[in-house]
Image (tube, rainbow, N blue to C red; front, top):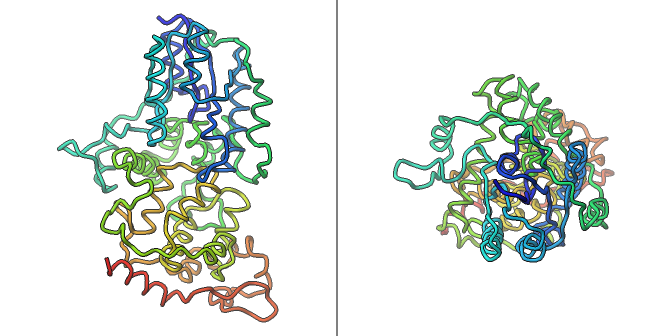
Length: 454
């Protein structure tokens, strides 16, 4: 039994069904709940999600309220976590540090540095499984190698027992009342200082439970999930990214209402799979998974890229998706596929440019999932869309937004255009919306040639 433990919240901003926190409480006389504002993550950088900062701020505020209700509070620091071990934990009689595990290359390096600092200071370090249904090491082929195709991975992974959610340990009275060196109110103001407020999904445990409850109503998910004009998706992704609910809470709530074979359950395993790929093949960050496509001569066309970013390509379904992303920090999954395909297969622009832009704009930015999705769209990833299958944006909008409800919502310039005009848009006198910047048929032929030339 440890006398005093420090639990570091990270991508697990909740009290209930928090494996690492429950382990710390069961094996310690006192647990200090803490959050480290790591300068490498909260200060500006190329892959920083600005909507994600607001979501995290909301989530931390909610977490602190929950701790106050338990007669505790969140202890906050601003430093690299390994420096916290040297400068604070060792001086405050902390004998164990607990975290829930993360799986990116950055997270691995960070935790190795924390563990090294703990060893130097005689502090035990514990890393717990929490964020995924299955750890990347637990679902492997019979020869011990990692899967690179989703379906066999899924068929294996779903055979494994999924843990039931565990409430906060009844001995939560062990949660410390040590005052924070940095008042959390000041810390939360600082991280969003100068960051525009996004009309995106609110963070926090309360919002997560609402999202789970709404997801349990999606009985028509299979037939409506691809229609962006409807509210027919779960909006769980940012909550799972920041851990305002656990994947187990979401899994069992949805399984209980809609069944364990429901398509939403399959999405949780896709999230696990893309994390599994990034963990076992960390070279995917910055490089094509399919190394034979590393030499593709992607264009670096700043002008066309800016038009794509701003939603001014003249392809209504593409532009509507990008405008939704820029305004809200969210984009419907069908639109993520359409816009990514357009950037790579119509504009022939490097998928890494799109990956970085989505990282900056998505409230649910998850490095492993974002990378996997972009490599899927670019046909450079594992189990990816074949390079010769290219989304036709005109057919996509006719099929998934036939009445142009979604398009008109995000492109008010087209309010006075009729639906037929929008589906065959080539510009219209008196309407301030651009003509298409490329010819899709020619652009898709060129994309195939780019891949065939390798």
